[in-house]
Length: 212
Image 1 (cartoon, helix red, strand yellow):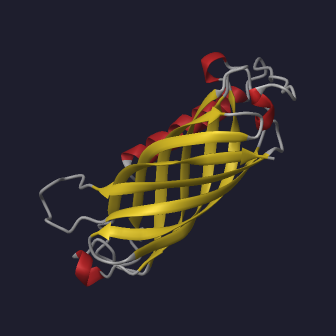
Image 2 (cartoon, rainbow, N blue to C red; image 1 turned 90 degrees about the horizontal axis):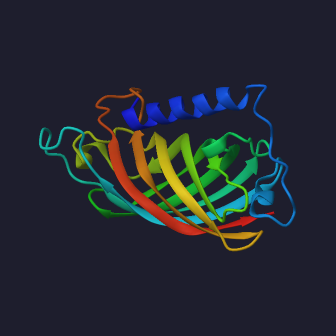
């Protein structure tokens, strides 16, 4: 497990434990305020488009090809709780399903497509239209990158994908928002077949959200 992804899991677990303390009251969402779209049971649709660039953890040691790609991601999320009042850490948890697909702009292969289950924490301050968030996700990915062409980066057409992203929404009104995010994505087969070097990428997305 990569360092960024492990750190993300630890961070979210810390928030879960703190949010569960009896002394943490909940904010009461009001229909006319920005935080109302984060009330428990509310849904969100997001569409973001971005690009991710390949990097090596030990740069220069294996001389394998770069795999850079552009993807579009469609997400549906549900708010799991009303926002907790935790000072600067006030916010709520959100669960999302994501479908993504795109093309490889540099390197072997032509396509990446797959699905991810995402767990997100939204940092919500009363009356603020800027809502940062942190998310981690895991799922599957299909690619036509071959083991031979990638020199062992990819061994199977269907692999696992992990992500750890930070983002921010700007709430335009009680329904629509602009979204900007950046972070890390990893593709590998979890040791099912060797070699299992994997593809590590950093990049970002821009798009929009709609609450309903």
